[in-house]
Image 1 (cartoon, one colour):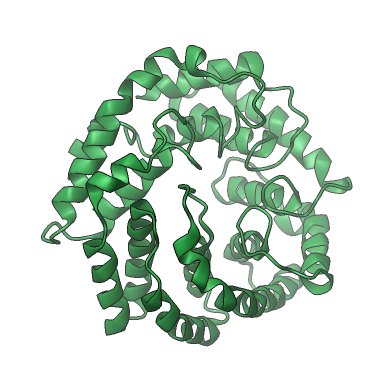
Image 2: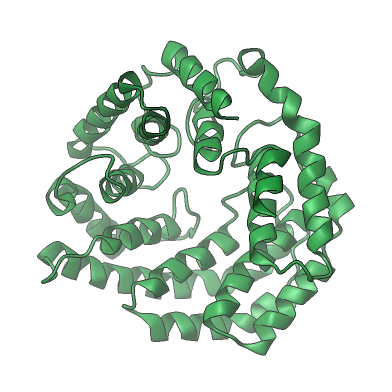
Length: 357
């Protein structure tokens, strides 16, 4: 389905390059990531030039009074720039490029009263930013790295305080969201664990959270599967029998026929629509062994959803909503669909499944 990524690029080129949002999720930073991946895949210099121009716009926004959040602000822009440098799409010393972002994240973590641990506008967004910054290691560690290590510790401590009282809300989520805060914060902590900076604390948090994870089963079946996938990854690092048992309970409690009714098939974006659900199913297929009792249900559900939705791609320009903020961006727009197809070719069709089994 590479041609769909090209068609998406053409639509964005015609209609989506003049937006004033420079953020990662809805704006120019996210669009630049899509165009850099596309240029590398099909080797067309025009797409790389578009990506360069978009990145220049985002970079210019680093010194303005932009918000600090991950969704539209500096943390997301900084994450995107760090991603591009680490993956050799762009060059530069990110300690210098992102000095202003580091400073604003420092102030946000030390001076603001945080009430949310959402990825988009809460503490988990800062965790993702710091994880990515600290992957880019130099020896000896730079001053920026030393400060960001301390900020990571601070962010994890604040998450411990903020997440714990909110576990009762696990059962209250009634709309699919790929950025659902509980599995996303757990994934962020898994990424932080790989940095080997504050591992004892992360292990302690996981074990202290276990009674809460055992006490509440998500209402949505897609969320049961989502949480099972992330907990199974946690089990690979912390092989606690209770984690393994909870994964089994979540899978057993997942009704895959009901799961298919929870997805909005009219929404063509990764955050709230069926492509995001397909992504979770893809990860579940990779995460669980083929002899797992639920494995064939996961595979069949993947097939049923992708078979049903293939026709949406035939009329992309017709299906494109008008005057919807972020309609071309990564999370609720076309660039996210195109990027999925570039990173996991055929992921939105049975082609990817056939080649991965």
